[in-house]
Length: 175
Image 1 (cartoon, rainbow, N blue to C red):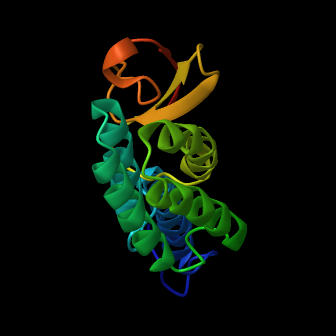
Image 2: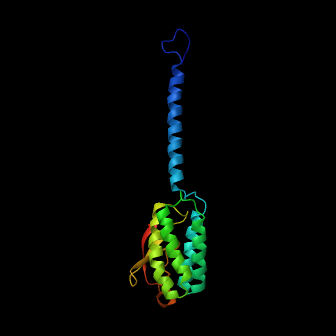
Image 3: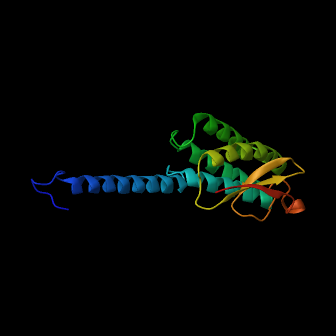
């Protein structure tokens, strides 16, 4: 396009390119925002929180009360080290209370009872924040009428351990 003093619309090429540039920037911003929303919470320690939860679950599956207690102690340490911007103070308080009860209980049966409420509270946090790159499976035990989180689809029931290892079903997936 010719842009000189005889043209009716000087610099019209610049205006059309500016519009195109604005559209490109807008599209890039939309893509970056969507990609960022699909990433796990970029808060330090949030992913470790889920891993600590899984350690407690796995200890209960195997019937190891000492490992469950140690895992719960590690969970409390991890969550207390988090910024309250990552998880609300109310959720932190509930999770600390639940994990603390598991840590203090030395009886596997009591730990499993506390784990039900702990899992319910952890599921709320997992739904509110993307805690991991991998899917988080919410699994349900009809005998106990309680759920738990798992990093795998196969059922390994923490409420009954080896006596009813595969009792349960996947009820939801957090991706």
